[in-house]
Each structure stands twice: as C-alpha cells, then as structure tokens.
Length: 309
Ligand code: GUN
Image (cartoon, rainbow, N blue to C red; front, top):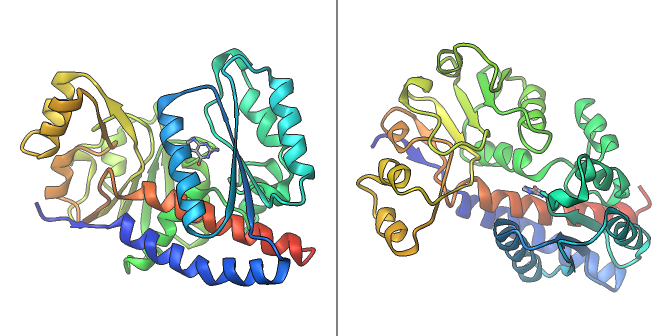
C-alpha cells in the first residue's frame, strides 16, 4: 500500500474554517446570515443522505439553510414555481435543487430546472450562463465537486501546470467542468468516456487521473501510471455480495458490508493504492469537499448580491 491518502475531511475542514469569517462579516453587515434554499423532490435514499449532510454543514457554518421538500408525485410546474419563489426571496442567496429528479418529471426536467435558477443564486454552477463563464474563465460560481478537487490538489501540494490530466466521465456536473478547471490551470487534458478506445492505456499516461464515471472499482492498476495522483469521484452503493467481497477483500469495511448488506465504494479499485503516488479514499475523499465548496459558493453569492455585483 504505497499511495499517500488525500484526506478530504481535513481539507474540507480548512475550507469551512476559511468560510467562517466571511459568514460572520456578511451576517454583521446584512443583519441576516447568508441563506441557502435546498429543494429535494421525492425520497431517493442517496439524495436524502447528501441533502441532510448539506443542511447540517450549512447550519454548522452559520448559514440559514431551508430545506423544501416536494413529493415524488410533484409536477415540473410545481417545482418551477418553487424555484421562482426562491429566485425572488430576499433571504436566499443560493438555490440548490438536488439531482436526480424523479423520472416521472420527464426527460430534460433537470435541465429546465437548472435553467430556471437565477444565475446569481446558482451555487451549483449548473446554469448555462455560469457554465459559459466557466469556459471563458470568468465564473464566480463553479460546480462544487470539480472545484473541490482543485482545492484538494492545491492544498495537498500537487502541481497541475504542465501535467497530463485524464478525466474519465463527461457529465455536465463533474467531467466537463473538471476538464475545464484543469485546463485553466494549464494541465494538458484528455476526457475519456464509454466510447473511448484503449481507455486504460490513455488513462495510464496521466499524472493526474480523475475517475468520475460512476462504476464501482472500474479503474484498476492497468489504468494508472506509477506515482500518479488518482482522484476518485465515484460514490457507488454496492449491494451485490460478490462485488463487495472482491472490492473490499482484506479491508475492515467488509465487516460493515456484512452487517448492513450495503456499502459505498468509489470508481477506483483498491489495488490502485499499490501503484498511485496519491489517492483520495471513498468515503472521506472528494465527498466532504463538495459540501465545503457549496458553503463557499453560498457565501460568495451572498456577498456578490449584497454588493450588487
Ligand atoms: N446530485 C449529485 N451531485 C449533485 C450536486 O453537486 N448538486 C446537485 N444539485 N445535485 C447533485
């Protein structure tokens, strides 16, 4: 086991500490704390867990966090009306609608909802205006997971400039903005996806390899150049016994699986720890950073709204 483990909890704690004085200064000046409206539609268990972590972290950092729930049977129009009310609210500086939405809302519902959020309150950085600004390197609200990865690299002393970076996954939420942020830091970036030929060989050219495809244990040792930094963005719930046994062999987490019959694993196979120079664990790697960056984005949105920027 050679890789240095990159501690997301510790880095997230540092980011959250740096947000505190900004929250206090804003609250003193505005006479109210920065406000975040979170909307959760339906009862997807993974979303429930993510949202409760966001609510808890926001409260701990002195933000006002309002969770608004809609039933799985809610219509897209109802959700859009709720977003509209949050757009017009003076108390809310940030709006986050947890993805995915129930399938019954129809194809393209998420896009319509993200499009409807006031770009100045778009703490997810998903609105097309903020995505466009990101491409032009002038965004102040950037998607939380990829910006958290950049913070993790910076705060862990891992150089980006001039290095080869490979991102596996091309989602709007992680893969594409991740590639853009790495490019802006002067990495040479390749995006790989399900149709990429010789994916393992391409990945093995990376100095920085980001796995964001959502397949448990997909990235094995053949994907990794010795000494590379490997960032595991995957959060996959595994209930299949054989898969859990193969991914958790020799780990104390196997006992946890045996008790709960369910466990969260990343996209990176544990054997990669023998090859990589540095590696983010799952859990405790990128996940806490996503939340820290959400808090940071909420304060940034609050400050910008207050100063009329
Ligand atoms: N679902 C998974 N990750 C995210 C995220 O960063 N933001 C939102 N809104 N939904 C998500």
